[in-house]
Image (cartoon, rainbow, N blue to C red; front, side, top):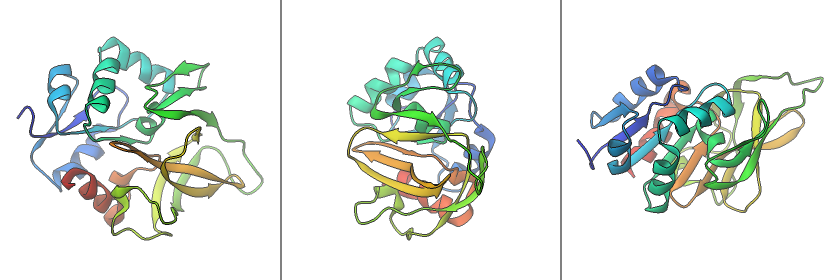
Length: 206
């Protein structure tokens, strides 16, 4: 299997069951693992995530996967971060104190400030929009398509790269990014019905 599969990274902070079930609908040539060698040899990497930025980075460090993921990014392996997995792609996060991220995309993960109209955490369906320079994984997905979100923190980009946004807490926030082979989505494609499966197919089959 090594070298010709999609690998879902298991580091103790992901909703692996839902992601695995979604990927199974697209390909049988995948595995879920924390094995660094298998991860390094993968053709595609999916980094899911639910929970704390700090704990997630500690888990990746303890498994020896921080350097492996960075090496995979540097050699051109396509990587898709989902929810917390997208946040970990950024430079740092501020959940339970300041924590360095993978720094594959320059930016910070900061908390939402609730408004009269929008509560935190952000839970539910929201429309996304991207403009003309949208990430490649959105092929066949129109602006205004709804995806399912669960998060209290959002990504504040510090560099210019392909991205998508949604409107929440009285602001347009980045909920998807692509910097060459490094990609992320804040929402959960594995819980977003047909549109989510289309996104995952675009990533896995590209």
